[in-house]
Length: 468
Figure 1 (cartoon, rainbow, N blue to C red):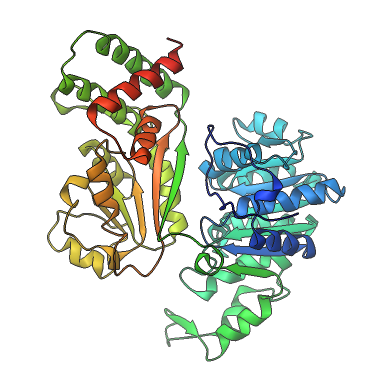
Figure 2: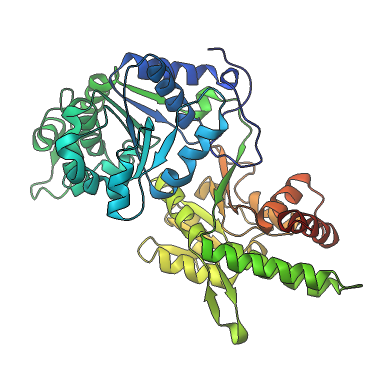
């Protein structure tokens, strides 16, 4: 394999060109070698460094060597349903077929007998799978994406998964945050790699050896020298890469996060597009009326639309699911969320009732954010587009709803991406596939968006989808 200067990709799109093996970067080739050399291993890659394609490339090499029969990939639901299948389709050198284990229990059980070499399942179904196939376990390789979700040794999903790991020949862990809260988080993850060989076979023994506590046992902290000792124990099987050390990236890293409308939501959205074409086909349509139609489509793409008297009609929760995945991946790092409509704000608050969601308009919110005391700060771009310095509070910005104002877009990004920011800024765009979101994204990228241009682009895109 050879490497080139093409940057790694975190997410994919149906419009992206297929890539070949020459697009892999040098550090990704090192990750492939690490997986091939270690039957039990972990890739602790920062977001955006391509751990998915690294793993798939290693699996393809193993498959070509007839080194395994079936691999099970365990991932968060949205990642399982979309990210892994999309990545498989994106790369020319990945020729293995995949199947998603989803649906009713009967259907899931049937799919586990598929002869496809890659089986993908969301982590909530791990316990079901272990109980359903424990006596005839079909997978000789297990990949755990976002392995930090298995960090709790008392959790059912960990207890069930550990029951069958002795029957697995290769174990691969993937995460960017192996110890986001404490080095205690490492024990269960490493146990899934080596069965307790490096960090002892019992969590209590691990804790007693490397940690001290207060007299009540409520608070625990590392013993002197324990951090170095733990790192020394696991360094042979854990590969840790920091984005700042391996990628020549700009200060701002744009990440497209595609979401996919479920069938009923797609039907609703399609009817709205048909109405849009009918209305905008009239001569001399007032631009404000056209803007209102675009806003309706944007609302639907976000998941809810206003009906009469500000009543909100629910459409879908796909963007909320995607946002939740990003918040989880950030593992406690503050996240700034840009929303477009009041309905977005209300739904975000309901989804994260215990996560400390704070509106930037609340008294003291800006200072608390800058002091890194707010897990999720929500803001409408118009409320903080100019003059606010938010860069000390975090480096992750999520566009829940996309604006069709280039000024608001650029100014909002500049709240974090500005002088004084000491980390790469990740800007995530939640983009509903085959909707107005993609039109807006292209217009924003071209940096010439205005109402007339967006209207023309909308007509062209919708006409293409509807064959008109």
